Length: 425
Image (cartoon, rainbow, N blue to C red):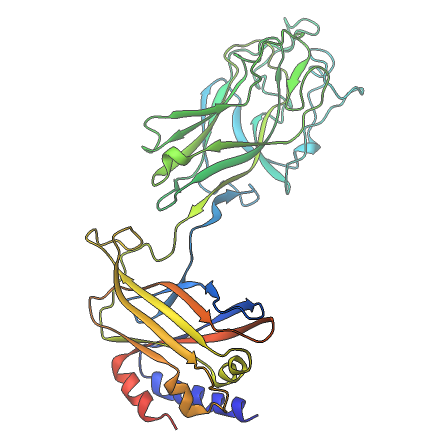
């Protein structure tokens, strides 16, 4: 109980003193594991940065993360559409499975692969209830709302009044600061089977100049000539007589990291023939990438700032039970000549070795010891205070230990530190 009481006193004093100053308090929980008679252990723990406001922000090594994602459940969200030619267009559809293919088309002009009598319905969304679709609820296909039954012939695949084409364009997506990027999306599709490598084209493109020009990323169409029947489709499930399925596709966006991009999904029948099928459905668009460290920014201190590293009294007692020696190391870096942190020419501003427990220091550690097992780092105006390396070295222990301890970090204005030191019991 004495340890808990002492910690409460420290926090109360800190709260009173730092209340009038720009101060932030953070705690690292550091997990560790050592084996018997191990003389040296090193563990890297999360990185952090001191910013101009005097706050501490956690930083992390590069890690995979989501840059952009849309499951289409929130509406348009800045997606846009373009009708290139014809009357069919991309649009959001909710509960597509409630819509069926027009009875004058289904089993009259086309033969769908379900193997059951009409009606045949559109697929459900891949997730949730909503997805994008190049087609029309009026017909359940991409034949175009201006199609006419005459002079259609039986099982001709469905003739449109004209070619049907349109684009679906994403919001602007920033790949700034990323080192890798991958686009993934889910699609269900059903197109003609006579010449599917050059008709009913489903293409994905990318732009880095706000749509002024586009680079080709890929095409979903099959790569070989099928030469199927006019009334039977090629689907995302295959050919012949295979129902469509949702398939995940991916595109490498590494050549475009650092750019602001648009993604375009383009459907083009290229002609007016064999357009009586259910078309292209799109859902769950995601871009993932390597997220850079959060300290890769222009960061500086605009006032005298002290950063404090230490452990609580309770943890100090716990550590003393486990280790003959434990040192906590901090490396603080500044920018090199390029004035950007996290580059090869970063400059080491200060290297700190915080001796938390010394060999033989197994006696009771009191509040006064809290002051002695801490290190103050002085950052003057204009300094870049980036703590890029933080780890501990543990001396030998008599048995295997798996545990954790807290490293308390304060970032406070210099005047508050002087008052704080005078109030240590």
